[in-house]
Structures are given as structure tokens and as C-alpha cells.
Image (tube, rainbow, N blue to C red; front, side, top):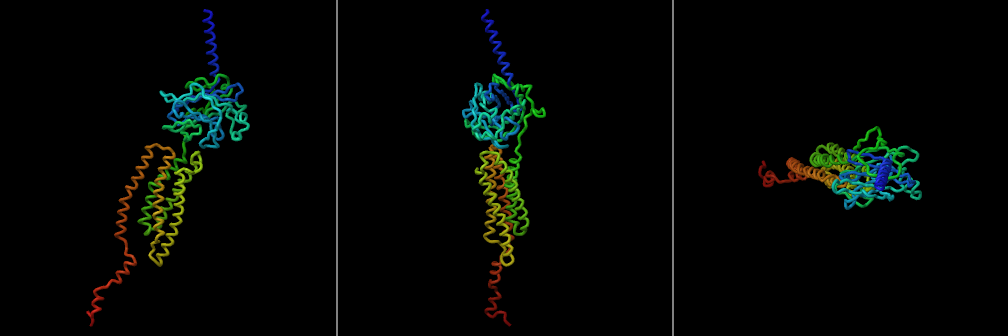
Length: 427
């Protein structure tokens, strides 16, 4: 009986120690994302950070960052492993609001790390070794010199960011340097450093936010992330390819000769929209590792298309000037130069239609959106074909006789020439 009582007391003491150990952690529950984050700072002089992240796998990734802004802050990004039975945790840094790059810090994952086949919940229970103060832990690593301390020294609180990626689709990888998309939602909170420090690790956090965790302006809600530059880039080029370009092509083909100023106006609008859509596209390219060097097919074709358009704008002024000179002493057609200008303009339009589709694929848009764009692009051609045919027929019927045709009519023999030749009609 005494032995049983002794074991009971030891069990109760161990449970009390566990409770006390688990109290040395900060826990945050984010209901909008069904995400739990837990942080513990060991007080054993190791400079480690114990972390816990649990989030649904419908997100491409979930991430926490130590700091109040992305620039030069340590970020731990979690996403499904290649076999979709566990998770990959990638420590990353960035210079600004751009896609972070992998940095080989030591990460140890503990039991409980998994991707649940029943709930689809990603869970990472791990330790980032010597991550609290990277300058002290890695004095020989020059790439660390510009990074901020994950946990600021001599401060009672530390800001922590969190973010979730876009819909995951079939994304999974064991590569810690795998490409990730821009986050769709984010937030920030502050942990109390003394109350987050101590032995025992994170334990098993529950969906209850710790009382010593605070939020800016007392607002714990998840903030939706927007990318206005990417939205403007896509919308402007969709308007150009599906509306402005085909209208300008019609004006140039059938009204440009009679009202050249009208083609100048539509062509100028066309050109301004292209330049206006290119600028935010370049800004967006700088946010991602894959596009930063401007080497993707979408970017290369886009730059070639814009370059060709710039050349054709200058070419058009030359054609207009040449046609005006020929109009004063010739036929005013512009010759082969006008044909090059016309067909190059049509080629630029087709290239824009194709490149918009490449852009949708590069940005990993849904198949439904890409199919919708393909239907609209095809519909534009179906709509324009009968219009082109009708305008061509109308202009062909009304086409005035050329100078050569007038000359042939003038030299045709007439019955009066025949009568004069044989003496008929003479007095």
C-alpha cells in the first residue's frame, strides 16, 4: 500500500512538472485559418527556439517569422513533405517583401510532426537550434550579418509574424528551397519573453491563446493579403488583348486611310495601356525568385512583344510620312512598308493573347480561370471574323479606280476612232 502511494505521489509530481513546463510557452490560436502556433525559449543557454505549428494542408504552406516586418527576419516555412505523410520545415530570409530564400540553419523535428491522413492537418513540432541570436551563434557566417535577432535582447516582448499560403493544390516537397507562392493572409502578435522562457519545450498547445500574448490594436483577426500590382498587370493586359488591340486592328485596316487621326488615337491608347500594364508586371517580377531574373517564357515573350510594338509605333510614323509624300506626287499607298506595319501589328496582338495565357500559368491560376480566358480569346476571333469579312466586302465594292485603271480606260479604242479611220462622218 505504501509502495502504491509513493508511485501515486511521483506521478502527480511529474504531471505538475509537466504543467509548469508547458506554462513556459506562448500559444496563439487563429480561428480563421484553424492554425495553432506555440513558442518556447529554453533557458539552458542554448540560444534555441522551440516551435509548434499546426495548420490545414489546404494551404500551400504556413509560416512564422520573428520580427515585425519580413525584411531581414528569420522565417520558418512549413509545407507537406513529398510523401505527404510528414512536413518540411524550411528556415528562410528575405531582403524585403519578396519571396524568402532558404538558409541552412539546423532544424530538429520531434515526435508529433506529421501530416494527418484523416484531418489533413500539418503539424511541425521542432527546435531551431541557435536561432535566437544569429549574430552570436554564427559569427563566421557573413550572410547572417544583415539579419535581425529573432528574439531582441533586453526586451520584455518580441513580435512574431504568421502567414498562410495560397490553396495548395497538389504541392508537396522535401526540398527546403522549394518555390512558394505569395501568402494570401497574414498577421502579427507579441509574445511575453519571460513567460515564454523555461524548460519543457512547447508541449501540446491547445486552441486557446495565452493570456500573455498581445495583438497590435487588440485585433487578433487574420488580415487578407493583396497584390495590387499583380492585379493591375493582369487586368490591363486582358483589356488590351481582348478589347483595345482588336478594335485598333479594325480601325487601322478599314478606317485608317480615310481618317488617319483615328488610328493614331486608338494606336496611342493601345500603346499606353501596354506600357501601363508592363510597369506593375516588372514590379511583381521582383517579388519572386523564379521571375527576378526576367528569364521565364512569359517575361521573355512579353519583353519581345513590347519591343516590337515600340518599333512598330516608330515605323507607323514613317509609313504615314511616306504615304503623305506619295499622296502629293504618287498613289499615297505607302507600299510594302505599310504592309509590314499592318501584319506586324496583327502579330503583336496574337503574341499578347498567347502571353496572357502564359502569365496565367506562371502565376498558377486555377484551371477554371485559364479556361475562361481561352474561351474569351477564342470568342473575340469568332466575333471579329464576320466583321472583318463584311468590312472587306464593303471597302472592295466602293474601292475607287486607280490611276492605272483610268489610264487604260483613256487609251481604249472607241467606235468614233473606227469611224474616223475609214472616213465616216467627214463633211
